[in-house]
Image (cartoon, rainbow, N blue to C red; front, side, top):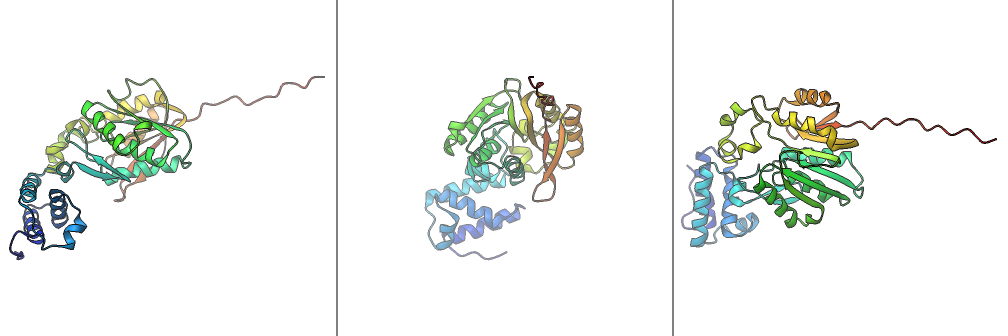
Amino acid sequence: MTSCPPGQSVGAYLCQAGQVLRAAAIDQPRFEARLLLAHAMGTTQDALLRDPRAEVPAEAAARFGDSLKRRLDHVPVAHILGRQGFWTLDLAVSPATLIPRPDTESLVEAALEAFPEPSRPLRLLDLGTGTGALLLAVLAERPGAFGIGVDRSPEAAALAARNARDNSLADRAVFLAGDWATALDSTFDLVLSNPPYIERDAIPDLMPDVARHEPALALDGGPDGLDAYRAIAAALPGLLTPGGIAILELGQGQRAAVEDLARAAGLTPTGCRADLGGIDRALIIAKDHIAKKPFVAPPAAH
């Protein structure tokens, strides 16, 4: 075992906590130890490392001990901190919502690529909004856009509204509690969704951080993982403007099945953006423009 400096210094606490986390098979134990101690002391990781011999006050040590105990019980770090970074945003999180993940940023990239003009007026919809991450990330990059986020959990919708306020986007975002699109009577240029897509029987086998501490409502995709996609595909023709697109997050290996659902609904899959791991993640689906009759000039008057 690596030796630690004596005393109650920052360096001692980090060393001891890193060893405990490593023994519990926690990924990135040293990084997580720094995150948790910085949070307990109300400072930054950089400040911790600048003075590793600084004493850890008793109250901070108690908070750190409680955080470490929770982490060893596989409570996600984001839940302990109450925050998670996503895109350019700092978002509040809670056990009522799925923690935003870097893989989901591929949907934001696909949306910005599809609508490259920043000032273009856009109407956006985020189905299963959770923390509001997807909707707010796109709104932050497209100042001409307005969006609605819908979630079946009232707690999630309230948290997303808080995140909109905290990120100065509340004037262009509205959040509602509802079952997918049943409460909506409007059309949108862009529909985003990171729906639940885990096969129900596979949930207990997920990492303990996820299986034990993230909301089942945000994970359970039904027996085959496709229940939410069926509901969304059925709703999209009535939600999208002519020429509008939907971008849906996929689980690994689900692209072909979700593309089939889209085609069965009269929509056209047009591509898929991979995440940083090379997995097909952001499926792009288009609603074709309504065919228009060609303009025929009236006969010239004689």
